[in-house]
Amino acid sequence: QQQVKQSPQSLIVQKGGISIINCAYENTAFDYFPWYQQFPGKGPALLIAIRPDVSEKKEGRFTISFNKSAKQFSLHIMDSQPGDSATYFCAAANTGNQFYFGTGTSLTVIP
Amino acid sequence: AAGVIQSPRHLIKEKRETATLKCYPIPRHDTVYWYQQGPGQDPQFLISFYEKMQSDKGSIPDRFSAQQFSDYHSELNMSSLELGDSALYFCASSSGSRTEAFFGQGTRLTVV
Image 1 (tube, rainbow over the protein chains, first blue to last red):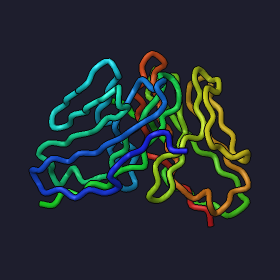
Image 2 (image 1 turned 30 degrees about the horizontal axis):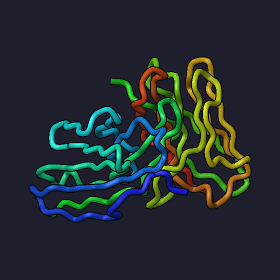
Image 3 (image 1 turned 90 degrees about the horizontal axis):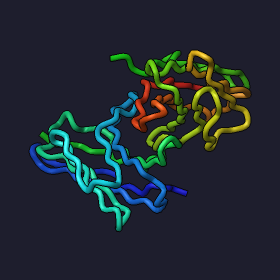
Image 4 (image 1 turned 180 degrees about the horizontal axis):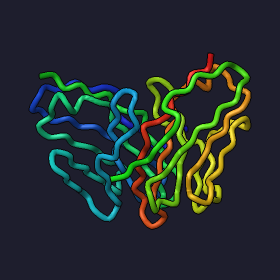
């Protein structure tokens, strides 16, 4: 059973556009929600993360929006660049325990 | 900054052979996670260790075992390898007092 549902499966965005990836979860015990960026053949790299006590976190062009009541969170990539083309995974964890990953979103940014 | 080191980076084994994957966590990290990622798949949790004790267990086959040593490095032992074990195996580490987990570059295991 997929603990974290992620959509869309793939996304194509023009350079300079906004990329939005959505995730939803059911387990209210989750208290840590990271996003990972993965390039082919490489390990997932931690991009940005949020905890349920805040509704938004911004780091550079990357923003996480978190809706605790809806049990949803999303990643927004502003001013998307071709170098952002990668697979993005959302994840959820209960502090100290395993990370549950979403199914991934393949992002392609067209120049 | 030091990252998670995994070795070997690539490994080719024949069916029914054994393989040992090694993971060296970031210094002062006491938690290690192992994940398996098939082509086009999300990482699947196998097992984790905190302070050298198994802390959580996922979909790890009985043919696999793992442990964390006194220096906090971890080894994943895989026996009676099957073609379906071909995948990328990632190790991640975190500190017990924080939750941020950082992944290594992975070991690509190919079973032929």
